[in-house]
Image 1 (cartoon, rainbow, N blue to C red):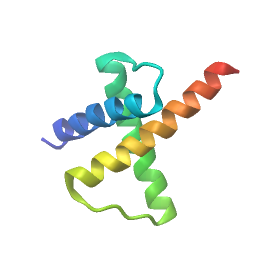
Image 2 (image 1 turned 120 degrees about the vertical axis):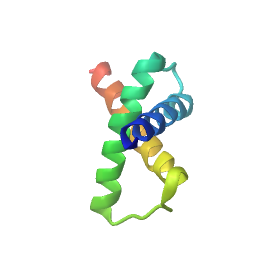
Image 3 (image 1 turned 90 degrees about the vertical axis):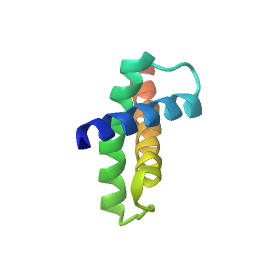
Image 4 (image 1 turned 90 degrees about the horizontal axis):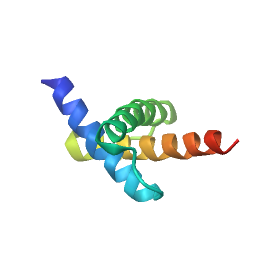
Length: 81
């Protein structure tokens, strides 16, 4: 069941990140992949920096969205070069 919740959080985070960054999303599957990778990146960054966001579903979505936004910005910078 945890994998299903992780994918749902990834989908929501990827969609939110594509809305925040602008320039179009990556489609349903692409947004989910960006969201899941963003969740991993966000969890790593927040854990490394000692940051703490409220737990639960909302905290997971916030961390995953921030990670996905960072990932989208980095991907666009790489694509530009």
